[in-house]
Length: 335
Ligand SMILES: [Zn+2]
Ligand SMILES: [Zn+2]
Image 1 (cartoon, protein in one colour):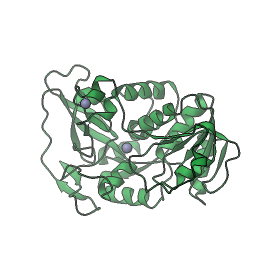
Image 2 (image 1 turned 45 degrees about the vertical axis):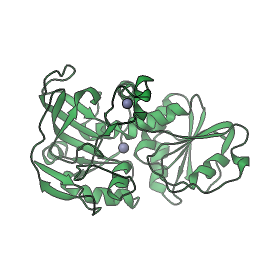
Image 3 (image 1 turned 90 degrees about the horizontal axis):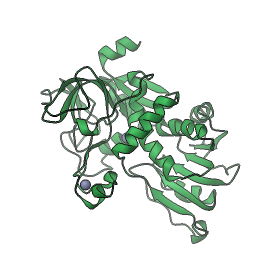
């Protein structure tokens, strides 16, 4: 099969013919139709995350069809549409797994990082971590639900019942979270890179009642701030915008350093926390919600061979919404 390979040295992926993956007990062999390009993929190829599997096929927002089910698979059969998210394996017996916090497992496996992912014609995944996808979304539109959607949803849940939500960094995750937050009756304020009017327009279309630059003051005090941009300097900026008792939730896996700030910004029970990974429960809950709501997913499609261009566009901030790689056959069908 054809695959885009990260060799651990160059940030540019190599398009290479590799052997088809082999399905084991409990696994699914999947024909990949689409795979989202997440900022985490950039952190991997740009060496900001340590110890990826090498060589690696990146990609953890995989939408495909089951070609073969290994022995013991109960939930899927050949021909089923399937989604493969970031969480690819947990141990099931560490302290965190036993406490229903498998997102924090001590020995996890992550799709497109420590397990081969979906920048390829086929992939194999442990069926226990795969998700059924809501109908009503095309393959390319469903892909961003698998990480931008699920992790965004977990980030929003961390904000509790906060009513006034600020979102810093308005890309794939934010445009989904904003729609969910609006549906829940919350007010959304979007902060983008200064001058990024395309992202501000997307924010307004996604239900934000205000969109501006991250260097502008918020029009109202915020009860929660969700940070999706990998920019540590936004943490004190967001803290400054919070009401008493408010929370800053950092939704990304990697951020530049957070500058020192005065304790005054944290005083009055403000909090800063991060979101790590997802549980299978998060995945199932969000897919149920995505099936109930009609989410508008803004997608820019690239063919799989064009993965490097998609990553470059994401790195340079040239994208509005989510980048998705589509397999040539699926690409033709959707055009
Ligand atoms: Zn564990
Ligand atoms: Zn991701």
